[in-house]
Length: 442
Ligand code: HAM
Image (cartoon, rainbow, N blue to C red; front, side, top):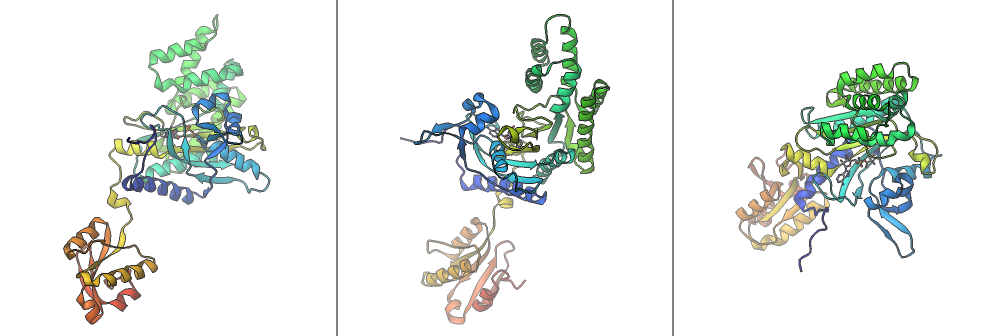
């Protein structure tokens, strides 16, 4: 019987692992550079945590089970509820604002497709405890900075930004009762996944029958299609005279101004079609997309004003985003931007070689000394010609080959070959061991 991985999950062979580590290391470096601290939580939680956040519907979207104590548990499908639970547990003592990041392994019971698997690693960035446009902008800035660090330009990627609060205020100003907003959000969120005709049909389905129908349809299409600089300007007319719509529009403009000052405006674009599926977002929301083929969002986030309170904590606003290794890698493959193994895998320091099988014990003791001193040192398990061992050293991505020949026992010297330049020198063993990281004397 042959065993395979479960669909939607992946094995990571060392070459895959090198790429995953490169992505994760870049996430961590960018997070630390922007002042975020790392946290983590258990991979499974009480199912109720996710139900409290999203209702019963979430149950079919995650992996859940009952343990031997009859507790209903679930593997975390996202990090935000666990983050809220952790902050709520120490809300009185944590200094604000909280700037935290994490790289959890998540599972979702999804139908596997391009950019979406059932198990993935998700980078989360969150700022909690301060409700200000500068924190909305900072989260977007961090995401864009990561894209920049992995070599993506505004020609490759766009960060689409909207405000649910502005959308809600405009809808209210135009006479759409609040209890209709959720249905309208769903239709606008699907805008780009539908043809123009189908989008209009979906809009028609959520308009009221009777005299207001035509007007509602025109308004929803006008609001729903607004994007770019002109789209934002066109909404100014609609917001005029309505205090909350004007306030939310000013805030969204402020986010764009800050992004401009931070030098990433060319990655960013206003788009009313970004509403985000998750129910907890209340303010500025954003999603990044590749400009070529991959149609799935590669990053998504936004402001959540009530989540902590809904989960039993104090009223505290937060904002953040998530992006995963799966989508990042798919995008890099599509753009032919995957880094080569040589650029991302760590170079080993030494490969110790015997010129004669009798010297193998010297090889082992030299390797042991180098490893004890903290160097990555390797050797061949087979006694074979120097040339073959040097080939192995090169295949092993090693910087220096250390050759132990008869002169090792006779004169106390060994040879070191720089495998990058081909340069080879003979040096006394003591001198080498005193300063192994500069075997060429440089
Ligand atoms: P989300 O939109 O569900 O948001 O996911 C964010 C990102 O995670 C997506 O844009 C995508 O890159 C990645 N992702 C989601 N599902 C999958 C999957 N099945 N396979 C691979 N990648 C996936 C959230 O999860 C929010 N909790 C993010 C957040 C953090 N909001 C505030 N803070």
